[in-house]
Length: 532
Image (cartoon, rainbow, N blue to C red; front, side, top):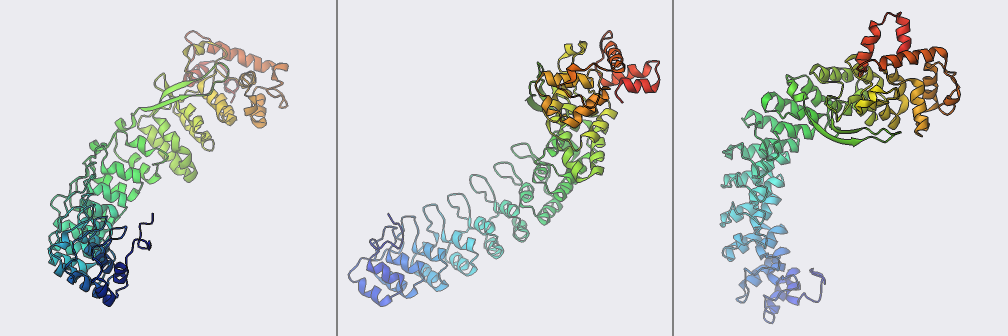
């Protein structure tokens, strides 16, 4: 069914005459038709005349003794409400106000009054008329909004000023969010409106139902002038919302580094969330300028000692399938290091060393913790791998970490990092073999072939590996089993095996090189044993 003014079956001649402002015809029809007959919207001729600003017809209708001047449409709209909604002339509005008692405060079914409507429009002349005729200034609609809320939401500065000087309160919360007009002004990012309201505010730290302060809302409005104004006027940056977040945390989420720096400078360090570094390193939050502020600050080691849940099981290759439950702290930085590397090599090194200076380990510290060398493969950060790997090696990275302890006592141990390499990108294999005691170039090739994943190792990497082992460059993983290893390489593998199987085993790269350094051998021989 057509519930509109265009439905001819429900519009009577009187309504149509009022709509067209044919006052003479309206006067004649009123002798035969009841003025209170409504169409399918609940509109009478009075509503039509008011909505379409038909002043002459309106006068005729209101003078009719049978007219019910406060009659409402199905949506609870009076003639005055419709006149205001359609921005009728002041004379039409004034005539209704002067001839219909208390019509100024009749609201819709959602308790929206005419003053709500014109405040949102910024119609100052009509607002003044309504106030002069007794319109309630702080009346709340179904959502708890006052006319001042509506004026602020529509950024009608002059309407806001008029309401405030007429006595409107800027601290009435709406529902269910408990946003005051001051909160909304800060959230909308309108500094002119916010500054107009501020002198009427008694508590600058008033919070919403979710615990948000005006400062937090101003950050979402992204208006630096409002943020500066609030900080200069003493707003407390240490208030937490119901999620436990400070304004600083919200600034981090929004990613405006200028806002973040200003709030960071006024926030006490002991109030800053301990997981702020972890959050700043998330790819969807990461901003280099914000990360630099944090890493260059006086944040202590406790901010670099967090636990991140990380349930990951790598692909099963052969009989090996590493599984982790938590992430190493350094992995939070490795998660974004490729992004930083592509933006600035200088910052890549600077941020990496700033992390390590806080005592962050380059190895897994717990049994089920994902090692950084595994994680960098998991993130597929290949462009920055060689630089990141060298930094980690310089700081004691254990290439031979294996999450299966008994594997250390076997000659065929495949450390987790090599499984990760075969899972993601085998280009990293030659880098790691030079620092591994447990993996030889030909052994990893044969392992990949036996496990059915040798196709992941491209021909260039395969050539590099067989050359490292002393084979002819034409040898591939498929033909490796049919070739006899060079005698020098067999000797090298035997010596490495003896070192691996010494009493107590060798469980780290650092331990391997310490043993190698103590051996009474020429440097060239030591380099040969470590594939350098």
